[in-house]
Length: 167
Picture 1: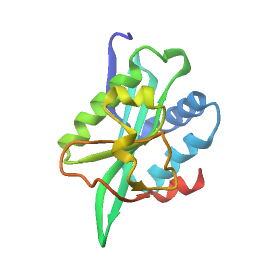
Picture 2: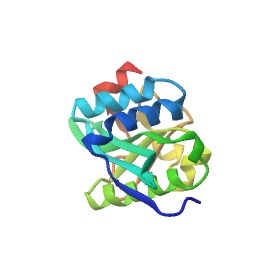
Picture 3: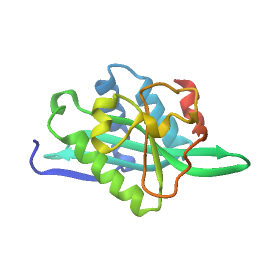
Picture 4: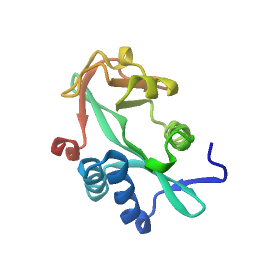
């Protein structure tokens, strides 16, 4: 467990460090480019960074997601990506980021979060595939999971921010 971890909203001055961190964590540029585009397109709902002794060691981004149910569009969020510096993985950085972010999006009134990721990892936060199984999505598979905090749609078509179409 890393001590003295500081979690705060991402700032413009963090952009280069975030890009480098996400690139290193995912061993390639795709997710870093996704972050850059989500920011440029103003599709970010919440973006947090984790710092240890002044060095950026983690990043999480939640973008706007819409659930189309009939003729209604219901706002939700997509957790993507979550990145931790390779040298700081398995130290609680990712957990701290996700837990803080969940608290903040709930406080802001969000009722549904969707993630495409490792069920064993994201299951620790309450994400389950069963909650996402009835959603129509290009990403529909066992790794598509959802977590809700109230009156959220149980089914419908997931409409991701345009940046996801480049993945």
